[in-house]
Image (cartoon, rainbow, N blue to C red; front, side, top):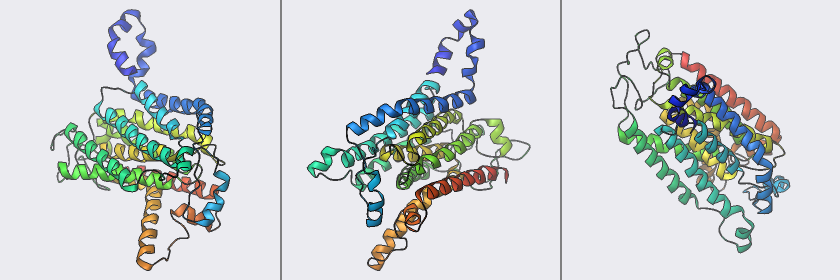
Length: 391
């Protein structure tokens, strides 16, 4: 909104000599930081009223668990409201719409991804956790296949539109369709010429990549949201890494210097990533142990899907997967546990899945699990960013 207003009133600003005071909004880097601060402030200021409203609506944790031990451990959290993801998503969307360039197609798609998955998660939370749902004995939330249909459908639509918006194969000014491999030189050092032998994804494979990143990351973040501050804290670390990757991808000189893909118009997505970081930091104020509120599927589905979308657009899926390795291992532990349980007639690999519950039941405190997973995620972000220089 503000960039649009800046463009619409530029001549007036010059006549009134106000441009010297407003020109800072022309700088993307300032708007990224402003979006982070604004999203943080929104969550902090709106947190108590929203949490109070959720309590009055009795939107609390149902306390369901596949493990008797976990069910006992979770009793103390039974009255903690969930669906706090509306704080995160509301702050992200408001900050992005205010400080982002709304004419940017990639930013428009990013807002669609965030809202789509937040609504999907919110509907699931509402069915599972409202008092009315529990009293009537209706089903606990959406079925897995129902959520997956909407996630896959979103990935399909985003893949189609994002591919069509990208510049065609072989265009030297953008590499929006290139397959980025580890340690690959996208440009020739010193010349800035596009390297020979790059693999350009055809439309079908680009769409498959979109579906896997958006649906996969959405579910991975959702599975990881099981302890106070776990998902939000990891999302902060990954979000900071994404701000760096997006800034490089949207700045042609930096992309060519670091030999990574330059994607035209992608730099504006850093505003969305900055808002994500700020909103998650603000949410941690209320979500750190002992949590006053849980984000629920409303927040976790939106966070994971948005992270996957940002990785797709800047063509850095591999690096973002490295950053999100904790998320990925969490969902992989569930797949392993379920598969092994079915194939062996009831045996288990872990005491409980996802893996953070296994560690908790093995003697780690919840705070130890969360803090150590944060540390691992920060180190993974550092490793991923450092690998950019290894070409």
